[in-house]
Image (cartoon, rainbow, N blue to C red):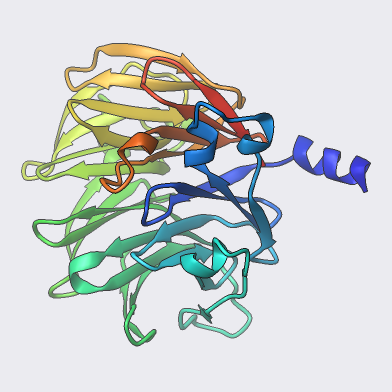
Length: 328
């Protein structure tokens, strides 16, 4: 059993992360369908030991990989192959890991079991948006658990979602090379940006796929096959192309910076002008997710965590260096 567990850790990929509503715990989901819960407060304590950096509880959530997770004020939601599940944070922290409910979007055939690899909460509308292998965005009412509508427009796998809160609009990016904007009030597509068609950010040798995106009001940053690029949404204009050769898998706005990660060990910090401010190395050979813990209830746990192609979750107490790693 020890040899098997060692081999599992050796070949582990951590696809997803989510911080608890109180800000003191971190959930991480891997390619074996497991979710591990770490105590950030214990790991960050001045009295922390090696045991403090290991999961306080690990449970089997899905048969396949845990592609995406988000947290509401009470629930941890996780997505795998064709389904989304809910877990009560209060029960998880008591080490009771029985699922609260599971839902499956209405697919075109009963034989279709596409990956759901992107989840997005829309708090004001109390909606959960799901997207992935069936090229559609599904909207679920979190109060009733019913699927309200599906948004169709992408012609290939959807990788990423982002919320433009003021509008309210949802942005989606996928293998077809397009970022599409959807108006949640009308459930219709309102804008399409075919990123790969813009010469300044096109990289045909890497493909047209969009693997990450984030938005901040009138601005969007996205990347993947095309170069990581900052866009002005109203004019659909690329304004800054970031000089990063490796495809990026996760990007987020943070204060006056853009943070990105992907192929390679480093978390990259960019000025909006395109200048690379810093590259901070981590322990994984490739990174798939970044999580910023900014819960006001736990300012002592304000950290950046990064995970990907290893069993480790790197913890950055400030953006300048990796403080330590949690171990799945």
